[in-house]
Length: 101
Image (tube, rainbow, N blue to C red; front, side, top):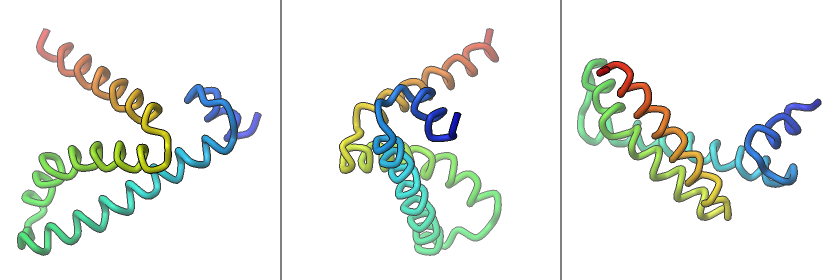
């Protein structure tokens, strides 16, 4: 079983082309967020490691989610990424609800 076949099965997509598009969306999102973070931290003059870490959690992480959906929509894979986001948020909610129980 090839890695593309494994991804098709794991993600529940029908063809190899869809896997390639999904990987392309992840790549575009990563590059966009990386350059946006660099630009924003320079523009806002954020220099300390602690401030950069806090900025990444509070601003960049939500921005990544929005950009992921935007690229998903541009590449015609919005439904996949909307489901992906919902699954991720459910997992986060489960993790935090267990800690507070």
